Length: 212
Image (cartoon, rainbow, N blue to C red):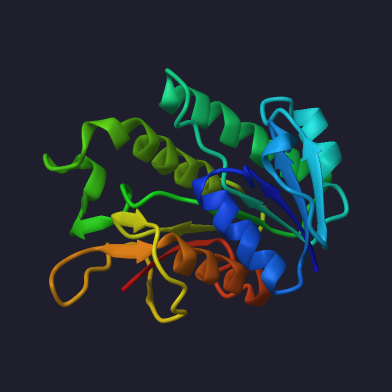
């Protein structure tokens, strides 16, 4: 299986890259700075501007799935840049006729009570609001697609460096919490859940979540 991984040098993207290569997948890493990724077996690296839809579509042609770990964290207008980027990614995926598009989502759009999303609670950190609202908008855009085979995986509230245990729970639109009331997942186990989805396609045209 060959996948294209957008944002492969980022925090989540690099974990996805490690997991995919460890499973023997062929990966085309699409990044803005190829120098950040070391050469490895099974890996092809290409420079691409996500906002250049035509160029992105050309890079996506011929793969079995596209995984987007695109983010706008480094931009001054995080929300605006992210929404512009995800619109381009969706358009490029359609133009390239890729079989599947999988997107790294956010925890902010998960419900903490009926009709109440995490990003709308007073406790939600202000510095992550732009990213969370961008990911929520991405989910709306994906759900509005009439034919695109998409999947979004939202992490738990705390997505932190840790261990690859392979032991976690999956959910749908509600925030997962553990016995101590904490919502967390390691970035390594998040990558396991995402690459599982790449290989098994269990959540076609749905958002799901992962947590301990």
